[in-house]
Structures are given as C-alpha cells and as structure tokens.
Length: 85
Image 1 (cartoon, rainbow, N blue to C red):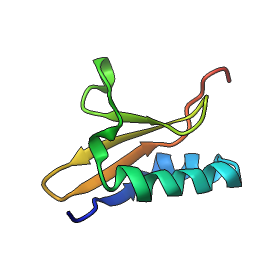
Image 2: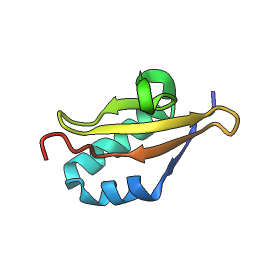
Image 3: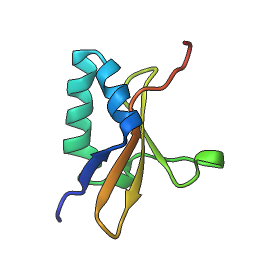
Image 4: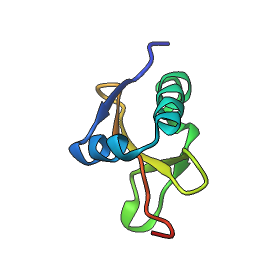
C-alpha cells in the first residue's frame, strides 16, 4: 500500500519551528512511520474540529491533521497545542 503524502499548512510549519529539536525528530518519525502509513490511527475529533484527527506528540502537544482520501494526502494543521500556556 502506497503511503500517504504529508503536507504542512503555514500554521503547522510555524508550530514546527517552535518545537525543540528532540520533538521535531519525534514528529518526523511519527509522520513517516505511523501517520503516512495509516492516517486513521489517530483519534477522530468531534465538535468544531469534526473532520480532523489528533495524534499525541508529547504530554502537551498534539498533531492535528485532516485526511484527503482522494489524493492520498494528510494535511498537518497544527503540531503544537497551547495547554497550560
């Protein structure tokens, strides 16, 4: 099965630059080894984020993404959340 392509929104790219080097590497690993292989492995979100998925990056941070089945692309919307900030 062909892996899904990964695309970052401008907001996610900005979040990525704010992550520590260790979390950046962890994000790369999760995207290449897990989400690109099986995008529905994350948690389906509800409410105003319905249609999006979430995958834990760290205790505080989540990867928020959407899936385009037609183009086999995962769009990363956020890579850093603001719990406790």
